[in-house]
Image 1 (cartoon, one colour):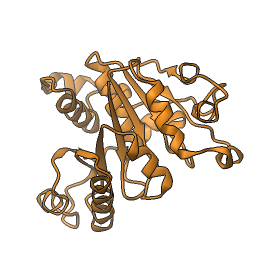
Image 2: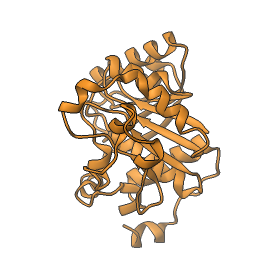
Image 3: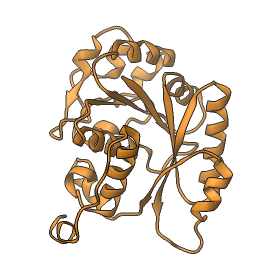
Image 4: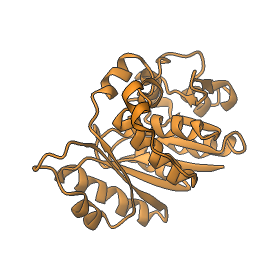
Length: 248
């Protein structure tokens, strides 16, 4: 089992969308995947996938009120998720370091466990980074996001964690964006992939599903499939023109 934490230096860069769609894409390759919503303050995985409130969640596991297996829910795509609670009151009772216990209890339950980290560099994000075998940094092609991504990389390296690479999301090709080559040079970690800005992301949110599932031939879906194939070391074949035309 490999634990991958998806993190970023700042919010709003597409971290949760990336965590979910990489999970679904890896699952489509036959891998058993669990996506854990470790963004305890502002959890979104459950909201994205139509399970905002569930009987047992990650918070219950962290305070010792439930077994981790009881907090795992299977999405119709086959991908499993562990949502966090939307209750603000429960946050005071949580010890972020308990995420390590959760990771330990998940051993043997999946090929990949993906932790969707809190944004930023606070205690909550550090706890998610600490459980990881590998880190994936998500950023956008603009200077503040890339600068914050660099801070996240340096912090992870200081913690002795392997940074597998960076994913640049929401690219439009606008001349005011940072060039991908400049981002690679600045961050000095492998580029795992570039995800174009895609209106279908918002449509998938309305459908409470992953874009990979709702719009499998969209630009973003194809990008996530390609990235997942690199992570799993599986060959990827681009869909044909006819598939793209008649797909969604």
